[in-house]
Amino acid sequence: MDIQLKRGLLDVCVLTAIKNEDSYGYKIIKDVKPYTELSESTLYTILKRLETAGMLTVRTVEHDGRLRKYYRITDEGLERIEEFKKEWKEVMQIYQFVTKEGGCND
Image 1: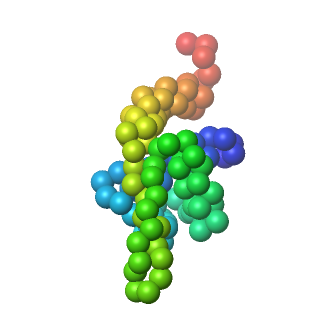
Image 2: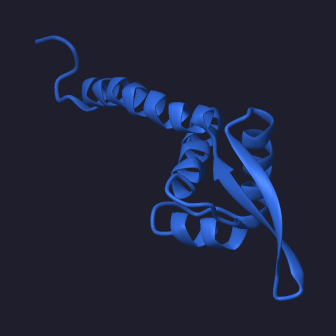
């Protein structure tokens, strides 16, 4: 899969994983796992990028004597999910064209 396309898809997956409640790294990986593989190193790169873009915020909480970072989606992050849904319709139209039997000579 194209790197840029996959990057965009993973960004939206991570935003969706924290859409309804604040979450932390291990839980995000667990929530996304049924849909796609996501390594810890990839996740933290994505989280940093999304934070820098203003799509999520981070807070640190002590949990079992250790510090745990919790991530919360922002309005910008919610907007990105909605944009993705609109963009995906176009991607699906392109997919249908590409996979159509007989090419474009109808």
